[in-house]
Length: 298
Image (tube, rainbow, N blue to C red):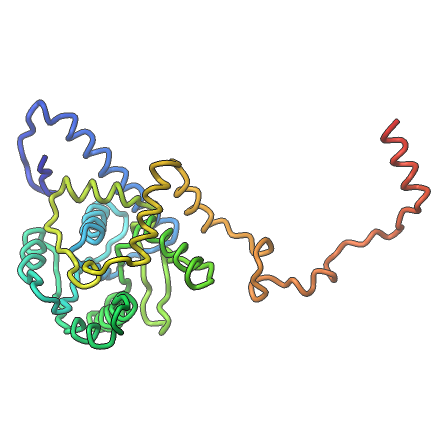
């Protein structure tokens, strides 16, 4: 079923009523979770200029749609500008995003940088492109955000991305680290927000299919086999099917951290625990202790 974009009208046949109802529930759920994440982490303030990083994938399309929807009803005013980084990958359809954004009435920029050639040149044979590609992409986008005066940079990572990053860092980097919903970049110049942090990938995928977004596949990293992230994502999807609620619990765990129950000596002062111990002023004698035990047992 084709779902019209916001602002258009389309007759709904009687046999499409249930599908329309299901779509409305899905859209409301994504919108509610996006709004909740924005509120919980104070992602957007009055007068913000939000640079929405649009890759042409399902996640960034969905993020843009949610932000446009919230922009109409939010009690504050904020500006949205979409930015796509054309990395000059072979056969990249350069007309797709400009046409879509023009039809949606969204201001946009297409930033052309040949990072594709650099990634191919710098990546050793047999290694994955992701690390170098993402670093170059971030650098270009963050610099451009400064050029256009954007106060926030919106990224399309969702709940499953955050969980996958957590497990990747645990399994392969020895770090208990994920992707926060809101972050100050290392150089201190950009505030990054992830409005879809509470949204499930399967909901986003379904929404994208129903909206019939013009998806642009990644022909760089998407062409590589045995990517660790792809393996982790497959494991998470399997868990979600077999153990409903497990991913929700994992995500909640990232928001309920107990430093004293982990082992990071920089995060918690284990060395001075002796100084904090409560010592009894009058230690109980051995005879007194035996009396208490005897009374308890009698």
